Amino acid sequence: MIHAFILVALTNKVEPSLIAKSISEINEVINAHMVSGKWGIVTEVKVEDMGELRQITLHKIQDIDGVSHTNTLIVAE
Image (cartoon, rainbow, N blue to C red; front, side):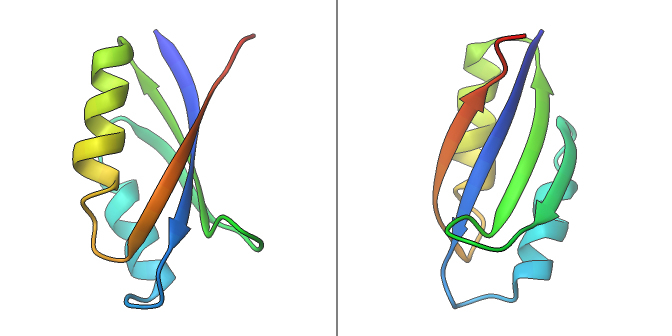
Protein backbone atom coordinates (compact mmCIF):
# COMPACT_ATOMS: atom_id res chain seq x y z
CA MET A 1 0.00 0.00 0.00
CA ILE A 2 1.31 3.45 -0.95
CA HIS A 3 0.25 6.52 1.01
CA ALA A 4 0.86 9.86 -0.73
CA PHE A 5 -0.03 13.53 -0.77
CA ILE A 6 -0.66 15.19 -4.11
CA LEU A 7 -0.23 18.96 -4.21
CA VAL A 8 -2.46 20.51 -6.86
CA ALA A 9 -1.83 23.89 -8.53
CA LEU A 10 -4.88 25.57 -10.03
CA THR A 11 -5.65 27.87 -12.92
CA ASN A 12 -8.17 30.69 -12.63
CA LYS A 13 -10.62 28.98 -14.99
CA VAL A 14 -12.68 27.03 -12.44
CA GLU A 15 -13.85 27.68 -8.88
CA PRO A 16 -11.42 25.87 -6.49
CA SER A 17 -14.24 24.31 -4.47
CA LEU A 18 -15.54 22.58 -7.62
CA ILE A 19 -12.09 21.17 -8.34
CA ALA A 20 -11.73 19.95 -4.74
CA LYS A 21 -15.17 18.29 -5.01
CA SER A 22 -14.16 16.54 -8.26
CA ILE A 23 -10.93 15.31 -6.70
CA SER A 24 -12.69 14.10 -3.54
CA GLU A 25 -14.98 11.90 -5.69
CA ILE A 26 -12.00 9.79 -6.85
CA ASN A 27 -12.22 6.46 -4.97
CA GLU A 28 -8.61 6.39 -3.77
CA VAL A 29 -8.74 9.94 -2.38
CA ILE A 30 -8.96 10.11 1.41
CA ASN A 31 -9.06 13.91 1.70
CA ALA A 32 -8.91 16.94 -0.59
CA HIS A 33 -8.36 20.25 1.22
CA MET A 34 -8.25 23.75 -0.26
CA VAL A 35 -5.20 25.57 1.12
CA SER A 36 -3.53 28.94 0.73
CA GLY A 37 -0.22 29.44 -1.03
CA LYS A 38 1.34 28.07 -4.21
CA TRP A 39 -0.73 24.87 -4.09
CA GLY A 40 -4.49 25.34 -4.11
CA ILE A 41 -5.44 21.83 -3.00
CA VAL A 42 -3.67 19.17 -0.93
CA THR A 43 -4.95 15.68 -1.68
CA GLU A 44 -4.29 12.56 0.40
CA VAL A 45 -4.46 9.19 -1.37
CA LYS A 46 -3.86 5.50 -0.62
CA VAL A 47 -3.20 3.17 -3.53
CA GLU A 48 -1.95 -0.38 -4.10
CA ASP A 49 1.12 0.44 -6.23
CA MET A 50 3.04 3.07 -8.20
CA GLY A 51 1.12 2.30 -11.38
CA GLU A 52 -2.15 3.15 -9.68
CA LEU A 53 -0.65 6.34 -8.22
CA ARG A 54 0.52 7.35 -11.70
CA GLN A 55 -2.95 6.69 -13.17
CA ILE A 56 -4.67 8.79 -10.50
CA THR A 57 -2.21 11.65 -10.85
CA LEU A 58 -1.86 11.77 -14.63
CA HIS A 59 -5.27 10.58 -15.83
CA LYS A 60 -7.70 11.55 -13.11
CA ILE A 61 -6.45 14.61 -11.22
CA GLN A 62 -4.47 16.32 -13.99
CA ASP A 63 -7.35 15.82 -16.43
CA ILE A 64 -9.73 17.88 -14.26
CA ASP A 65 -10.46 21.27 -15.83
CA GLY A 66 -8.77 23.98 -13.76
CA VAL A 67 -5.80 21.86 -12.63
CA SER A 68 -2.51 23.37 -13.80
CA HIS A 69 0.00 20.81 -12.47
CA THR A 70 0.73 18.55 -9.51
CA ASN A 71 3.55 17.48 -7.22
CA THR A 72 3.38 14.06 -5.52
CA LEU A 73 4.88 13.39 -2.10
CA ILE A 74 5.11 9.73 -1.09
CA VAL A 75 4.93 9.08 2.65
CA ALA A 76 8.12 7.40 3.92
CA GLU A 77 6.80 6.43 7.39
